[in-house]
Image (cartoon, rainbow, N blue to C red; front, side, top):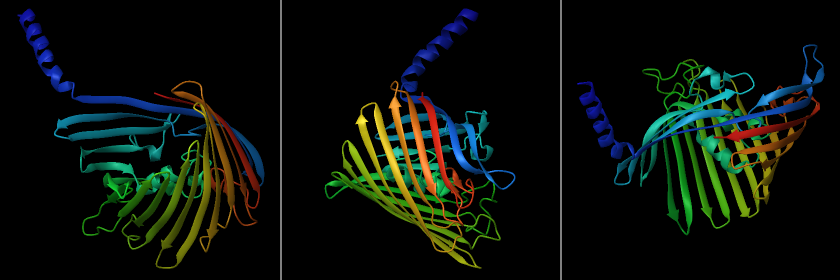
Length: 355
């Protein structure tokens, strides 16, 4: 009897193999840790000092994830991604303690584009990834605006590429019913504006030139703040003169509240140079023109160089200097991480491996 059961089980596995062969589950990840030194860091006595530390995610956030693909036939398929970000120096979760805080979505693929639902990166993230050569490294545009690495809960996303006038037009659109259900209240019956986010990135590439346009709008994520709006408009261009790539980008920020509207503009120029197949260098020059947000007009110059030790592992050196005015406190790791009015410099040497 036991032998017959084993034969039946083994036969069932053999029959199921052709079905399973159409599916795939991929385990992937990055572990990135570096040693960082930053001067003019605020201390408890209100002065500034130099901080030495281990840092996770200097070049890319440490993460691990699962990617699922299933072929349905006829050009259709199903995809799903579960991705967790973590601090490799402490073993703790990023993204507010979410288990799958970087991505958690499922969707369809077809000749008409990719349609996904869940927690996903916004069009702001995709815009910055395309046009900031140093990003998503720490010393780059997210130091000015954390939305450049933002994600949205409860979101529907559509991505597609079409041929147009000898080039490629890419559409990246997202709508969220409640972009942050952890710190906010999420979707609310009868108040659809609570936590609503609309995000759109249009990119056109022809020959060596790419241009992109961005629009993103978030409503306040509580019932009391639902009429508040935060809007971001962006425009950028890239010229690929291989082995050198040149970048220019602009982001306009409008914070519209009942009491007061606040505005600021962020500009940057960048370049990436593939010195050899194993060694590349990228650099950014960023400047914020502040109208009335109170953040001021700091300037950051940053660079990162990476050398491949193998196909999956590299060492990198990252450095940046921030020029603050007497009333600004931008640090290499964001606003409030530098002593007000000081010139802050940060250096980070790291090791990154992918699997």
